[in-house]
Length: 126
Length: 445
Image (cartoon, rainbow over all chains, first blue to last red):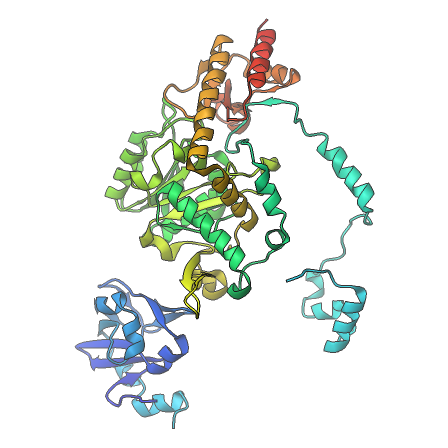
């Protein structure tokens, strides 16, 4: 399974791209494969204040609903309406479809994210 | 799939197979102090003795009465085809259709039910049904709370008292339920609604017709609700929807109601049928089951339970409701009833009842009663009569059940204590009307 090198990861199977100026968040291929065909996305409002670990939304597939957890503390800057309108696009290429962007307020949290190797190990990939 | 109870031999065989000595051992994980200590019930009776006991109980039903009692439950004629088809084993004993491949009949039945209620209410999505009008109305309010993320609900005092009580129980002091009184016309007080409405209200709930039979002006009220971002919830009576405007036509977001009038006998309080319908935008907040139509592997039409991810067994504490079942058999009764009558037949039921109600009103006016609330009604209305309680009792002695004594339904409303709520349906016969007139005359003397 490809785990893109330029991204950071969480143990909730989300990826993060960016820095203290702004971070984009999505879900990994591993997560998407577990879920199956995604039919609905529930995202927070722009301006919402998230704390790392908060359940901020959900991704719903035909057979399950999975909560989305904030990988970082910060304010929601933008949500991806195109992803909300076309949830199947996430299945096609989960690394190409960001779900929301937030302004991280804590750099120590950015440091604590997993790199590609650590995430690969987490999902048991050689 | 055949259903047969286990024999003692079956049980022994199963226990041996799993290596357990007796059934009690399977409950070992439950702490002793939480286990049931045994039930104080009598030994079983033979079918003959038990049937006799039930017949004697049933004989106490006053089927001889000329009844004008409604108050949320209405006697309509149920064509024989309804009960006959319900007796089919495939329908009578069917369980939840978790396996669509062996449950197409059940699933299609629910789909047809949903489609018929969508047609009646003029709304997009209909749930597979709920326990009764009270729980459906409560679920509608909870839907509005989830969808708006607000915590206050305004409910008209014209909504059935049982429904309001059920909602209060569910809200449990965590959510705010505020009652809006009715005015001198028997309609929800518009000034009070306006006073209570703001950006913290999730929904405004009105009944149409309301408990007193009065016809509200829901469009105006719901406009005001929408102006504040609150949802419009209407409690409706299904037969009346062939004559009155449908909720879809006057801006309703969620409609709830009691489906009992559709082919289900009064049955002493239940089982009944909770109707719930809403606009497409709210589909993900709908509680309970939803049956959808799709195609199978050979492109043939197929029915399945759909949008299951809202439900309790998948979403747990975030589910749309703790209740995941429906009233499948009652929903089927309603479906067969509606199919047998058709839209014209159902409209006739409503109009004949309305015409009978006017004759009932005339008989009461002749006997000295007054309308409690003026204004139009469909088939139910309230009157004020001096010494209502003793009049009611004397009429009952003469075999006439003159509706509901409002003093009983509203013990802390002295202004309603001389009131009676009466209805008529297409089953109200000339004989019933004669008996009413004669009894009123005798009591009046």
